[in-house]
Image 1 (cartoon, rainbow, N blue to C red):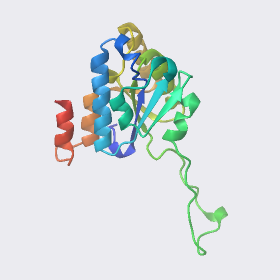
Image 2 (image 1 turned 180 degrees about the vertical axis):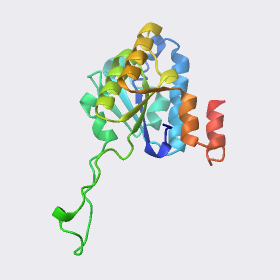
Image 3 (image 1 turned 120 degrees about the horizontal axis):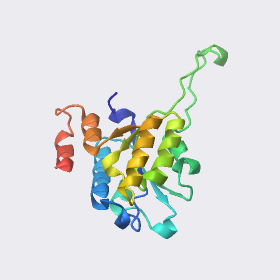
Amino acid sequence: MLLDAEESQLVLVDYQERLMPVIHDGAAVLANARRLAQAAQLLDVPVWGTEQNPSRLGPNDAQLRALCRQTLSKMHFSATEEGLGEWLNPPQRAQGGNARSLPKHLQKPQPQGPARPGIVIAGCETHVCLLQTALQLVEDEFDVWVVTDACGSRTERNRDAAFDRLAGAGAELVTTEMVLFEWLRSCEHPDFKDILQLIK
């Protein structure tokens, strides 16, 4: 199954100014997160951010924060514990009608579920906040895609253990370029050249 930009949302977890300097390969992790967010903006993919205990760890990277529709401040390690799920899955609107509409008891039930069920997620620390958020999103029946080269922990071992667990739980493991090219689907896409510049 390929990612579809029209069915995707991007969640960026805790790229905070006091955390990133201790993340293994932190500069590359942050650069890939920025690429994802910039591409999402070009392709009209909603971007959401989270910040863990920002009074202690500071805000997210300013460039990422500016690309997010909203940033959730949290104390729980899983952002879904503090309302991220409501942002990703807004309540379904009641279907409108007129005097000639069928009575409610004769109407077919509308399918429920998120309008954009594909959650592309990346962040720090992979084995704590990213892992717990992604596992709960899988449990909540979102399609979860973890962008491995935009995720980081203080140690590679912790990061890789989280990837093993996420794959076992049903999350798809992808890279930044995989996401961008799947969102585009074709070199004829009108944003292809702009996205290619982000990759180069």
